[in-house]
Image (cartoon, rainbow, N blue to C red):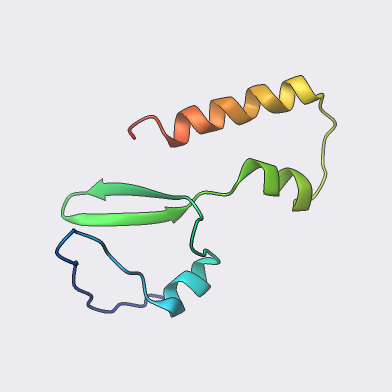
Length: 83
């Protein structure tokens, strides 16, 4: 489903995402999103918190704390590499 709406940037280039879109993406204030520029489009993708995933996600493998920490750091490096 494609939903679209026109919004204006504030004077400080702040963009407010309409509630129906944040609800559709299951994101809220304080969550991390990834922005990607594709031509003249800005793509916004939610970034799942690795700790929430570990606590709430389905369990499919066993891992040590050290392995989890290493994976978490690698994911953070990937997500924030251009920040």
